[in-house]
Image (cartoon, rainbow, N blue to C red; front, side, top):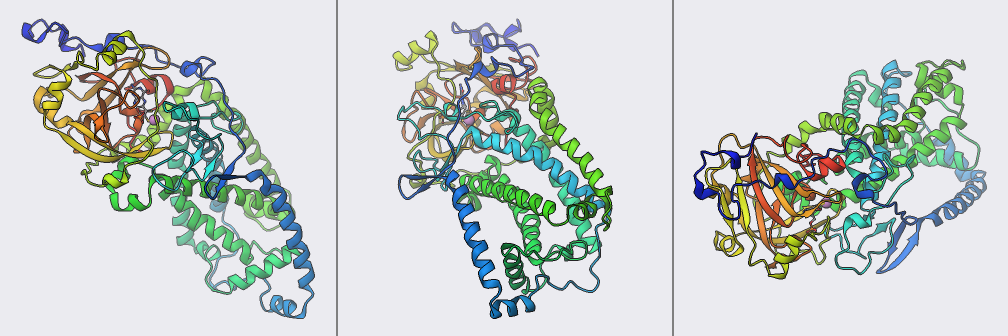
Length: 593
Ligand SMILES: Nc1nc2c(c(=O)[nH]1)N[C@H]1C(S)=C(S)[C@@H](COP(=O)(O)O)O[C@H]1N2
Ligand SMILES: [Mo]
């Protein structure tokens, strides 16, 4: 679509001295990046984090690596205690009463059908990508909090140094690099790609999980995964004593798991996996703004912390699970899960070996393939999760969730600060010469200075900001509702997207910009803000004007706005993918999750 500025039939009055009709699209970088190489995203240098630390009290930090020797010591003590008490008559008596297995109902199935093997394999395959990309997402804001304020020093967990004193320190500067074999991908601030992996594969994992639940309950296999009697608890204690005293229980997994195993599987399938899903969704700006009551307690940071704990559970589970599979009759165990038979043959082993080849190959190529074909990762990821993201965009929440007392004491900064001559002059002149240009497919293009903007109906909202990197904060925004702007400029029916142009350049040159769906512009929480917390917007937070669209992640909320253009589609704008971060860093244009 050609911008209407080139339409000669437009009345001359619309082409003001400032070029009311002309588009800022000529100032965009038109390049669309197709590979992740050394200069990608402005060549962000690698930066490594620190060993994981947990805060104790006000400001003491405990290095979690200490858990390795401490855990080993505790294990030795536990082994000594278990061995010591096992011979006691009372303990003998207890173990005789609770040998370690809880009776199954008479109609419980025996053995594993082939679908269990397939489901188990697919689950493990999907988890590989989910866990690795999840770690990359964490590395983009390597801190966890219990409140939505994300205040430096109030993090309870970090794998990064304390936040430096520089008031303009950005969340991007805080991100860390991972080894490419651990993160997916490992490159610093590759969260755009990591999220396509994470959310895309999540949909497959979820579909696999739904099939699993349906089959579990239609075949009766659920009875083998759900504790049906309280005696699983003493039985599990008995099993623990048996393992720790190094005289292990007899395996009968083909028929009935021992109680400790049963509890571990039950937690994994029926507690950890659902928490992973719910806490994942708890980080969505669209859902959180809509389900205000739930999200004021179950805030994004609680969700993110829980999501991390689920990760820890899964990793611990996987390590112990593999160790036990290997040490409790490996051939037999592999036959159960990989060949659906209870024999001592090598059949299960060979199928397992093949599965491992597939898994290891996938592990090795995942990051290099992502660097080589990032657009494919972006497209496939979007095909998988896009429909859900689009669905959530229909949400139109009301202001009023938060009050003045919820305002965050610290609000992170992010992005590339503007340092063009044009902006510096405006800043020096306190924006008296500032003009916001609103044009494109509208009946009445306008140019508004700050006094004119302030004279329009004032709109205020106290809302929570969700950065894609994971930090959040609450602030009070004052400005003009986008509905007021829509009423003034009257978009044509062909206008489908609204482009916000910034004074600031992105890290690789060209103006920062972002495309917003027009349906979202009339929402109650979409506005352009000139005030933040009752003061004029600061330089760092986007002076003189920024966007707020509370159903989306922070990167879509353009700061230092100089123009707004209504267009039919964004294929001709910049790199053509709907935003600076999409063209350059493989983000998406719908980011309501
Ligand atoms: N022009 C411009 N706007 C931008 C960015 C940017 O880099 N350039 N970063 C975005 C990102 S990633 C976030 S999270 C928010 C951060 O806003 P804040 O600095 O006020 O917290 O601004 C968004 N707007
Ligand atoms: Mo962000």
